[in-house]
Image (cartoon, rainbow, N blue to C red):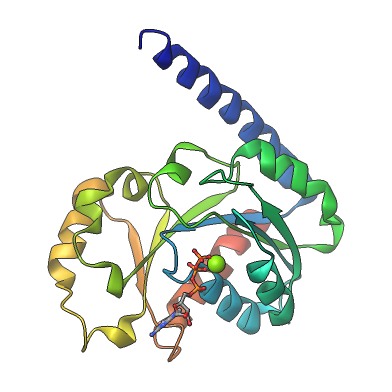
Length: 220
Ligand SMILES: Nc1nc2c(ncn2[C@@H]2O[C@H](COP(=O)(O)OP(=O)(O)OP(=O)(O)O)[C@@H](O)[C@H]2O)c(=O)[nH]1
Ligand SMILES: [Mg+2]
């Protein structure tokens, strides 16, 4: 047990260094990047698809999809109109900066303005492994329940924005929005939040405005 903490610190320290290298690589290429994190099925790929559909004419978009197995999500991103690369982690429950570093050369970044990284579906581990992207987004969804900020605080603490997906299901599922938002506020005060539905399109405009403003700030 006594050797465990130094080993973990070493792994996380190495990840931080590679994440910094990734950020420099993306900065030099002029590519604005977002890491999407959420539990399995919360709607990461759906949000990415809807965002591609609406912004594709304006920006050249690439997606790097992380999953334990399959190319289902990369195929969906490609079908939506993005250039897509799939990372299969082979069992790892999160992406890390080394995996992103290996995947980035597969893209011609000179042709890309916006890079979306879809992390492996998991509400714990991705929070400990920054990838070097410019923003980290957490997607919560109504069917997961309103207690998740209280039960998975690490994920809520470190993100730059929060999407609450599947609001079309609010009439059917007990979900106390005030209770949920109070939990978020304690962990990440003032966190910008976008309640939306990929099914109906409700709420998507505010999310798209935020992305466009963020790209605008990045490009100066
Ligand atoms: N009702 C409803 N269903 C949604 C919404 N967004 C996504 N879904 C459904 O939720 C399921 C999971 O969506 P995905 O986008 O695949 O979720 P994901 O987070 O990418 O899943 P993993 O990559 O497997 O972790 C699919 O059946 C979607 O059709 C929404 O806004 N409302
Ligand atoms: Mg997905």
